[in-house]
Length: 325
Image (cartoon, rainbow, N blue to C red; front, side, top):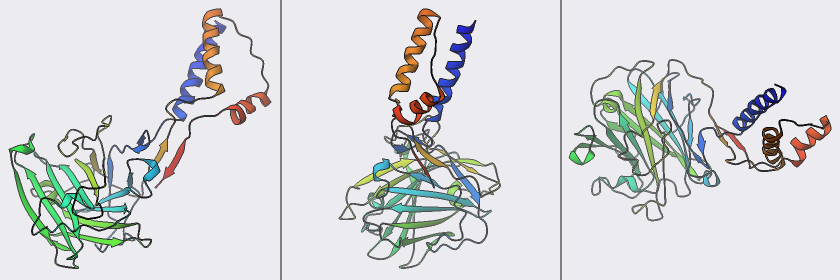
């Protein structure tokens, strides 16, 4: 009976220990965001590239590798009111706002440089919204593409373009977009206001509790600003989905966006947990379990000082890194 009690207690301890080093909002060294919180706008939102009128508590951080997130990452926040969906992207980008893709001549190529692409399912058919800033003319561009078939993009799309005048934020149809370089010059802010009619491709009045799919593809422009991107990442995933291959058509992978009734929520954390802890403690633990099972008897001799030494001196686990937005 004592043997069974000890084994049961040990299993509980081991479970708690392993869960303590689990990842949070990450898988391996990359972000794994599974859902975006859309908080209510705290007041009037001015689309100017400044986020001092935003509630950023629901912000998520996306990066392909923790080692490069200071150079290639995006922090995404979402807000709502009865008329608009608001999105902000804080890019880390070594060559910010360098797209030279002219929407007048290459309207389908804007994704290749410093582009945020939205993957949406809010009504019965998916939609792609591609955004970029044409640096030479200082124009913001929103390319709208609504699938004609609910399951296959190859069946055709209904496409239209919204383009601002040079240096302005108005795109038409109530949409607005602004860009602003970060003070350090290592990235930029992209701020976007989208009418719900564009999101749903029909009239829609939002309410707390509404859920729709909203995935993101980001592309960092190379030196030329009009060729293949030098970096790419996709994020906001359905729970359990980890593959980002062909994300643009993998509609069952696009993560949810949930409209919340209240803002100022707890910021999410990003924790890298070791996949296989190493060191003396787990080795001893495995030995003890084997010994118990084989002999059903065990005598433990330790002191509090020895235990502290095990935890703080001998123990060496894989690195655990915690970040908060």
